[in-house]
Length: 145
Image (cartoon, rainbow, N blue to C red; front, side, top):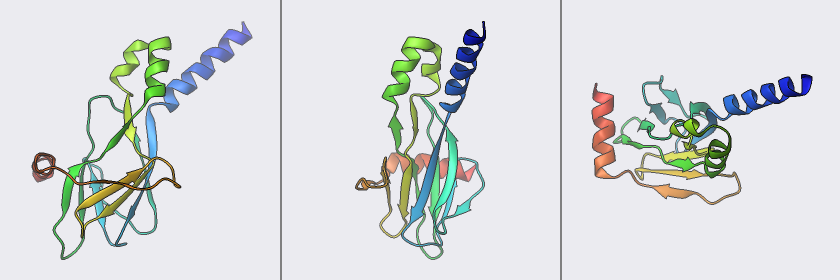
């Protein structure tokens, strides 16, 4: 009986821990203010850190501003969780509607260049993302409400 309780507790802990992802933000200029969805804006001084829920169908809309510069608006690139998909199929298929994508562990916002860089591991090279016109329009509309 104790063994089944232990397995239940460990399974619940795994499921709950899979519901969010931690990320760090950097910027080329240390005065960049970042707003993600309706969260409070944060100033990216050294390395700012946040935790966001995993999602399958949602997006994280952002606005990065720097005094005297045109803001960047867009959708944060999200990574696909293939391991979560396998676990969902094996243990709890409805979870696929909640946790297939999450934020990357590292983002860098370059307001001057109008780009966002992201990577999985600290030692990886940055992947550069430029928001499309449609994404920019969607994000501007989101933040104007």
